Length: 464
Image 1 (cartoon, rainbow, N blue to C red):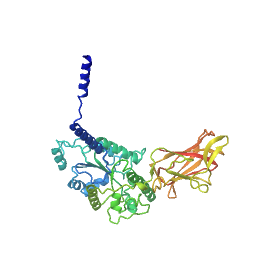
Image 2: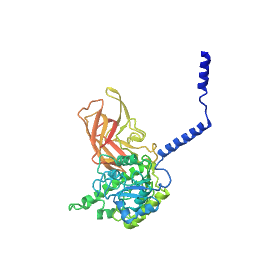
Image 3: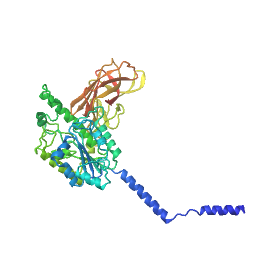
Image 4: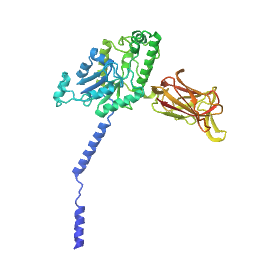
């Protein structure tokens, strides 16, 4: 009897599960739901197509202030379906600089606007939205599209590159609103060199200083143009990595389509024949009106400017160490007169038979350049616009003397270092270090020159 009972129990247990048609259907539905969720959270802001209509959130500086006052920005956006249009504009603002409104830089603007603004609002479009959404409207959280018109003004935080600050701002925004389409505007200014100098728009730090000379203004303008060029490059270099679309002011004002011109023209004066830019930076009422029309059209049609990935320099924002005898694939190391493909390797030095180094003298400097074979049309390196500490590893056959390291762009020295050896010059590894005399930005050549015979092993760069 016990055997029969056990058999019945096993038969009963085996017959309790039967795969039904509705289970298959449920499985298909579950997979579809998972797929939709994955698609939603992997949706790229750089995707093709128009920016989604509905609430739009906008952070800008004085250019956006001009768009509001003279360009009818809010009205044009809302007419096009981007409503409510919440524009936070602050002249002089950058990601870390507050501008005219104290304490409200771009990072702080996100905190200030991340709240329900329905209470006591007198803006018609906001009142309508609140009435239709249970009296709740958070400009940051509820935005379908977020636009950033930031990058023209200098940053207060000089310890971070513009790339790092971009990431910080976008991370803060996406923590509140991960689903919005993100759009970043590139930079049009500086354009009219003569107007910028005469009207002093770009050089407000010199206003009221009776000792300011014309050369001071020229130097300040050139510094500004360099900073903006670096920011411009970062905006395009990071579009895919940080997942945003680009609206090109540059393309609108100067009719130069990327990647034809990657940087601002390095000429004395870039003529704005249409008279849209009044002082080298800010736009006339006509310029603001036409540009806002262009911006809304780009949002509606999805005709964003694509980043010219192929010709953007290598973006080097972290510590870099290059082994000169076995360089990374993005660097070419050569010595004029010795080798076209790499430095001469010396095997063995006195009693150290395992040492390898590159024989360097003043007559045969080492030259480092981008490797175009690694990245199509790569022409330069891009460092954060900060000073850098540089160390060169070597073994010298003579009394150690300072090594000169220069950073050049198109044949002109951008900055240089006189690297001095430390007190512990042991034979196994001497290191000469120094700090650049000026900030590093875009460069296309690094040259290492030793006044006496030395065997170089590596070069390390740490941005400040």
